[in-house]
Length: 106
Image (cartoon, rainbow, N blue to C red):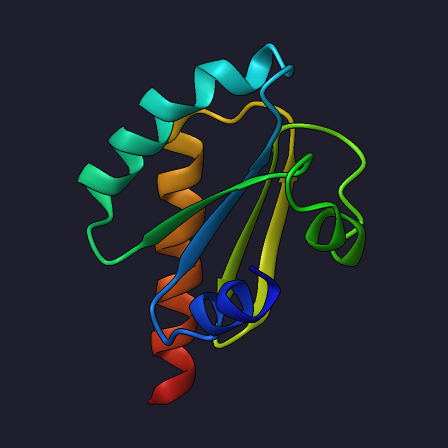
């Protein structure tokens, strides 16, 4: 899983990673939020990581609270958010990161 995960986050497209656990009550509210984010920002890749099944990844990224979201591009974390976030918040953050990246290209 580690190698596959690092290949996925090394994308030039934004990758939104949701670190969660089955026992986490707030985490159960995340799927409809992610669905709405995907509808709004089609180019984003969304990956869910169960911290109990992937403790090495949780440790590597110092995940201490759930849910935790990290946005990656080209393998680099651009933003980390701990706790519940609305679809609107995540969409705005993703669009801001894209705008910033595109302005650096000109």
